[in-house]
Image (cartoon, rainbow, N blue to C red):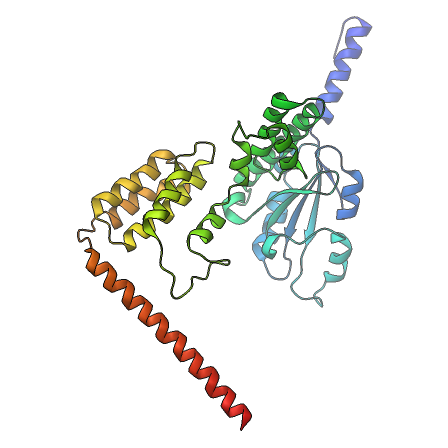
Length: 346
């Protein structure tokens, strides 16, 4: 029982009411209903496959309907959305209504948790055991839901503050927004470029850099399929990779990915094991908590024992043999096309 002056009693009651209803996730039956109810914490959708992924059905009950998941979801509206493999399966008809205009989970993986802000923008998603955890309560999943909600709140707070600022102060806030572990607001990078045109903060190149596209450029391929006659310029690749690796504005994992490209080419060039060890240790030293950093000690053992270094003559012979094989394949394909054309004419 609360005792004291009326004003203090009212204040205490108000505080209790705020505590009771703060961060209280709601539930909705359909995605459309969830979006109508959505506030600043948006909507969180759990995607499962009733007729093809039994694990996702188990987690629907043990994880998604748990108090821990509700607490982690803050004030978001939670909705479970089924994705059936067969249109004729029982419940598939209702699933279309539940889903409404919600997009499919990435690569149609279930279980997947997708996050939407109140405007309907998808700002995050995560799938499977790597992000949900392997236990039925999905301990990792609960943590990741809470992290995404906190990141969305921080994003909204920073964008609100940045709206009234210009120049350097605005750039600092927008740079922090860009570095949050969720999708960026639309036009964020354009605003950042206006606020920091010379990229003094490094946030523009950090967030525009794409390690995969860098690799494609180095390997002269638009799609990852290397041309038969491709021959890497080892020294130029080393120069380009070193330039990225030394740029502290770029994320450590991206810098490691770039340097691993150079390490792989170094092994193909039969660089001595001691040199390879040195390259690999640089990757580990940069950040030993990433996937690349954790892999480095194993890579040292696997690749660090290479003793023989090819002579310039041996490398030249290997290149010529490679070109000869590529030319042979090309001629064979040409002859096959000609043969086919002749048969069609006859």
